[in-house]
Length: 162
Image (tube, rainbow, N blue to C red):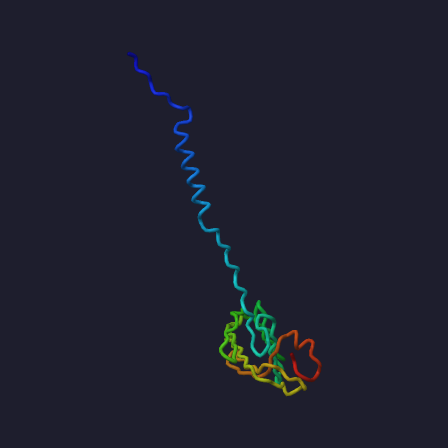
């Protein structure tokens, strides 16, 4: 008797491989559909007394005349017979009806701007601003008013700055 070698298919164990592939497809079809990624929540605008604090804000005072321009890029203090001083904008800190920015100017002076949600008159015009301001810079304290820069620029000589 002669021994005959078992025949081997040229593709190995094809039925077992096909069964595993079919099983994978069946299991995939039974799984839960992919969940959509949640959309990123839009940040609520930071506002005080109707003033969007993420937009440019102008703080101003008289006797002596001074101003602080607050933009996303930085704070710029200027005044009559005073050197302009710039500082980074650390972002506002909101607490109830107050908002403040605390930073240091490029010249090294401490600068704190605090706005309160109370009406304000600058004492020189007939305008009413939505915010009362206190600015502390280099040991000096100044008081004044504030509003959105765009609102100040479109306001007339009298009335409410909105």
